Structures are given as structure tokens and as C-alpha cells.
Amino acid sequence: MARLEVNIGDLRLKNPVMTASGTFGYGIEFADFVDLNSLGGFIVKGTTLHPREGNDYPRMVETASGMLNCVGLQNKGVDHFCDVIYPQLQHLDTNVIVNVSGSTPEDYAECAARLAQLDKVPAIELNISCPNVKDGGMAFGVTTTDAASVVKAVRKAYPKTLIVKLSPNVTDIVSIAKAVADEGADSVSLINTLMGMAIDIERRRPKLSISTGGLSGPAVKPVALRMVWQVARAVDIPVVGLGGIMDASDAIEFLMAGATAIEVGTANFIDPAVTTKIINGIDQWLDAHGCKDVTEIVGALRS
Amino acid sequence: MKKYLLDLTVCGVERLNGTHVVLRLTSQQQLPPMQPGQFVEVKVEHSPATFLRRPISINRVDMANNELWLLVHAIGDGTRAMAALKRGDTLNCLLPLGNGFTLPQKAGERCLLIGGGVGTAPLLYYGEVLRENGCEPSFLLGARTAADLLQLELFERIGATYLTTEDGSRGEQGFVTAHSVLRQETFDRIATCGPKPMMMAVAKYAQDKGIECEASLENLMACGLGACLCCVEKTDKGNVCVCSEGPVFNIKRLKWQDLK
Ligand SMILES: Cc1cc2nc3c(=O)[nH]c(=O)nc-3n(C[C@H](O)[C@H](O)[C@H](O)COP(=O)(O)OP(=O)(O)OC[C@H]3O[C@@H](n4cnc5c(N)ncnc54)[C@H](O)[C@@H]3O)c2cc1C
Ligand SMILES: Cc1cc2nc3c(=O)[nH]c(=O)nc-3n(C[C@H](O)[C@H](O)[C@H](O)COP(=O)(O)O)c2cc1C
Ligand code: FES
Image (cartoon, rainbow over all chains, first blue to last red; front, top):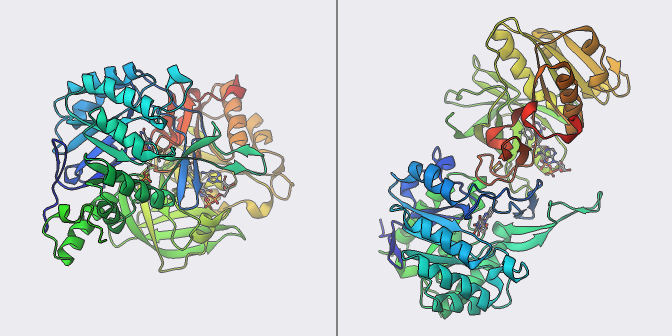
């Protein structure tokens, strides 16, 4: 048995395997299949200051080796999380991380401030792929100034571990990663979904209610891996890698590309017990290759 | 209800017609309890185009033989691969999912179960369980042609079975909602599953007559566990997941505008 513990800033994970926001509910939905305490952590649904109804149905299309979704951040708001969900998660012996979304930097900061009061939530993950309503609706995560503005506002309000989740829908993800690191993010996670589209040719209409949606699953893995590799070489803070991870060897690729930890998303839909298999698979691989500690393979590409 | 991830073994395949197959599944272990109206998320192997699991209704549970039946309509790559399974093959199933049909409190309730196309699948098991609970289920089943009416001998064993076909090749011609039984008999409860326009017409009928009515929805799903929020339907409580709060809903909760 190799040592699997890793650190993301001050946050200690039992192992590098977490679950991705929006794909694992509040964890409870998977409790029949996974011992939640065996995970490095799990990241709950995107949470906003006020409740949101999300987009209309249809919100999902299956695509080649992946899927598109336009759920649109449906959630009951941060107060509901604190009052109703948190009491159900409080007893867990793993890192419960909340994914935070917003429409303005102030929104994000207020939501983060409420979550900072929850003892058993040691970190938040900021989803900066959301539209900035004050600035024409372009996602915060696509310009260095907008990305920096959210992180700056949240950093003031949130003293614990702050992970910033990057959008891949940009020309230069490294510059965004550097901008958020400069504002005091403890870690960056990447990638969020890639913008995509699917059309019903008989009806000559988009298959999703709002025309476009985010692509996830194995289809995005090569893009995600490339971005993780670029970012990990360019910033000093730990990187959390995700995008299309289906098994332990996918996870190990991300670790070798420079990710300190990984998140499993869409794969949970195909096998709700996949995270346990990935943790065991990483462990076995390390043993088989004579590695005593998972950190030995982080960023350990041969040149 | 506790959910399971099981590798089930195909112990029988019955081809009903060119596109419909009943898969009989079993396990070494005792199958878990399952309610009528609940469903299974099936992992499809050997179909590269099929990435996500496929939701399929519980067609019948035969506890005595430890069998679960699925009625599959082969319409795309995933369901075609399922229909091509043979005895001895394994099928990975996530089950039982969702909330089923209501089991009436008092015996002797007259229930009409209205199904169209492959939507008749969950009604067979529901009818059986209703009968076991002392109710009197009747069935009103519709299809395009006589060849598309499925499992009739099984339905007829449980209760009165009324039929419609669009081409008149069996039963009354037309849609289920035009069948004469709806004018001649009275019912305490209706349950429906099938194409949405059919379920809406049934719901309108039930609403006008003041009959309790439940409909089983077939929204597109990804996780089947209430985690991804892809399968939502608009209800009195806003957007709710069909996979975890449904697939069976009392029609009073649905916002089917056309009913008003
Ligand atoms: C709760 C529930 C219970 C179901 N029960 C049964 C059942 O007992 N037997 C059965 O044969 N089918 C059932 N279905 C429908 C079945 O899940 C779909 O037909 C199947 O997913 C199609 O997969 P495919 O790969 O064969 O087709 P695809 O290639 O994915 O699609 C082929 C065509 O079918 C349509 N389709 C895909 N998914 C659905 C869906 N969920 N509902 C309606 N149309 C769809 C697509 O739009 C497309 O036009 C059920 C669906 C749900 C949600
Ligand atoms: C249905 C669905 C809902 C998602 N919701 C969120 C969300 O609320 N917040 C967020 O930051 N990412 C969300 N994501 C993105 C995932 O967390 C992840 O970044 C992406 O799916 C890529 O990883 P994967 O390929 O392993 O799924 C969602 C993805 C899916 C498929
Ligand atoms: S299919 Fe994922 S929530 Fe219903």
C-alpha cells in the first residue's frame, strides 16, 4: 500500500480522488454505492446566493463518448445548503467542498462568506464559467480581469482553502490561471465543460433548450489533459485535474501531467461506484511500479 | 429504498415481434424488492455509440423464480444491442430506481391502466400487484397495428383488457382515449404510460371526470439517481427530477398546459 495522501494548500486529502460538481449531487445520492468517507473529498452541486430554477428541459444530449448539458445551475440557494443539506453531511469524515457560482463578484463573495461559517466545509471551489451579468453576460472565466475580480472579492470574504475552477473556453488558459493565482487562490481546478452544440436534423432545431451546452466525458479528456499540463508548469499553486476521467489510468495521466488531485465527473453516471475503483486502481498501480507515495508521480513526466 | 448495482444474467429472451423483446434476468442472489413503476438503468455493452446507461421500466418481477423482466423496444443503438442479447449474457443493472405507482389503500378499487406502445411495460407488473392487493385492474392498451400489441395473454390473465389500434386491425380503431369503455364504465383510479400526447389526453379525461390519475414519464436521463438534474419536469414544486421524484407523478402536480 502506497501513501495516497496529498495536500491542496492547507487542505489534506486521504487520496487524490474527488468528485466533480454537478455529477455527484450532494454525495448522499451515491451512498448506496460508495463509502463517502473513502473519498479524498467530494464537491457538491453548484450553489448560488439565491435559489435558481435552471434551464428548461431538454437539458442533456448524449454525444460521441460524452454528453452535453445545460442544467443551468438549478439549486435551492446557499441558505438551503446551510440549513438542510449541511446537517446531513456534517458527520462525514471526508472533505465536503462546495462549488460556488454567481452573477456578480459581490454575489460570489456573499455566498462564500456564508459557507466560511460551516466548520465541516474546509474549502470552496469557485465556478467562474458563469456569465457576468454586469458585464454583458460574458463568463467571468474568459478574461483575466473578470476572473481576477471575482477571486479578489471572494478572497477577502473567505479565509479557508479557495480552489478556482477554470473554464476551458478561452484562448490562453495559462494567463487566466496566473491571474487567479496572483489574487490569492490556493489552487486551480480544470477543466469545466467545453461549450458545444447538437442539432436535431428532422426538426431543424438545437437538441438543447438553450441551444448550446457543456461537453463532458471521455471526449474532452485530451483537451483537459493538455490544459492541466500547461497550467501545472506555469503556476506555483497545486492543480486539480478533471475532464473525462473514467478509470485509474486516466487519473494517473492527469497526475503525471502535474495535477496533485483529480475529480471524477460524468463517469459517475455510467458507474456510480467508479470512484472506489479509481482509488484502488491508483494504489495498485503505485505498488506495481514500486512507488511508495502518490506524490512521486505528480508532474513526473520523463523528458 | 436501497439501490443496487448488479450483474444480472439473461435467463430467457422472448422475441414478441421484429422490434420488441422481453429479457428475463436473474441472479445468484435474491433480487431486491422492486415496486411497479420503478425502473432500471442498464449498461449497454458492445455498442460504441451508447455512452450513458439506458432507463428501462420494470415489466414484471417473478419472485418465485427470482426473475426480473424488461420489455425492450429496439429503436436505437442501445436498445438494439439489448435486444440482441442471448441467454447466458450478463447485463449490468442499477436498480430499483425512482418512485412507482400508488398502491390503493382500500381493496376493491377499480383501476384502469392505460398504455400505448412500449409504455404498456410497467402496467403489467402494476396490474399484477394491484390484483394481489385485492383491487380490480382493467387494461386499455393501444398500438399502431395488431402486431404491436404486446404481452396480451399476460394482461388478459390479470383483468379485463380493452384494445385499440390506429389501423383497426385489432380492437377498436383509433386512439385509446376514443375507446367506448371510457364512456360505458366508471373507474376509481387511472394510471398511464406511453407517448406524451397520449398521456396528456388520458390526463385530460381523468381531470374532467375527477378521477385520480398517475402518469409515468420518460424524460431523457443521464444518472438516474437524482444527481445530475438533466431529467427535470415542471411541477407544482418547480423543476423536479423525473428519475428520483418520478417517473410516476399524480397529474395534479404536472404543468401540462394543454389540460387547462
Ligand atoms: C423511466 C423510463 C422508462 C423507460 N422504459 C422503457 C421500457 O420499458 N422499454 C423500452 O424499450 N424503452 C423504455 N424507455 C425508453 C428508453 O430508455 C429509450 O428508448 C432508450 O434510451 C433509447 O436508447 P437507444 O440507444 O436505443 O436510442 P438512441 O439512439 O439514444 O435514440 C433513438 C431514438 O429514441 C429517442 N429516445 C431516446 N431516449 C428516449 C427516452 N428516454 N424516451 C423516449 N425516447 C427516447 C431518441 O430521441 C431517438 O429519437 C424508458 C425511458 C424512461 C426514461
Ligand atoms: C450534468 C452536469 C452538471 C454540472 N454542473 C456543474 C456545476 O454546477 N458547477 C461546476 O463547476 N461544474 C459543473 N459541471 C462540470 C463538471 O464538474 C466537470 O467540470 C466536467 O463535467 C468535466 O469533467 P468530466 O468529463 O469528468 O465530467 C457539470 C457537469 C455535468 C455533466
Ligand atoms: S437523470 Fe440525473 S437527475 Fe435524473
